Length: 141
Image 1 (tube, rainbow, N blue to C red):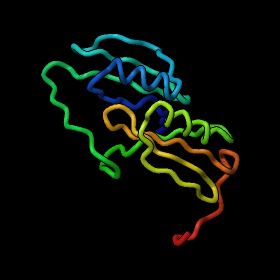
Image 2 (cartoon, rainbow, N blue to C red; image 1 turned 120 degrees about the vertical axis):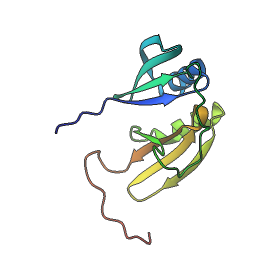
Image 3 (spheres, rainbow, N blue to C red; image 1 turned 45 degrees about the vertical axis):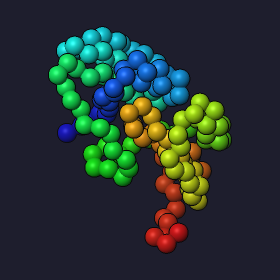
């Protein structure tokens, strides 16, 4: 079976605010917006993949978001270009976006931040070219 990744579907309490966030913070581009089963739904292209952002449908009562680590989808991750993570961090702070965790490891720098409705997003900056495996790390490092 050959699989091709297509999208992540994210339910948000405030559809318009979520779309604004993904556009302003991640640079997402709107592909399509329509109403589906009584709620707005927008397809966004970001980082070479699609996020489908949907509002709450009439009669739905979604459970509240949890904190990480959590079962199911824990976070969404994106690579940034070489030297761009610090600028991204500054932009997130300037926009008042909560940074949850960050680290600088031998092969990779990363940070996690909180998006709308508790969606956790990771930005990573690799220290080696993409597609090149980093050296194996000891469990204690």
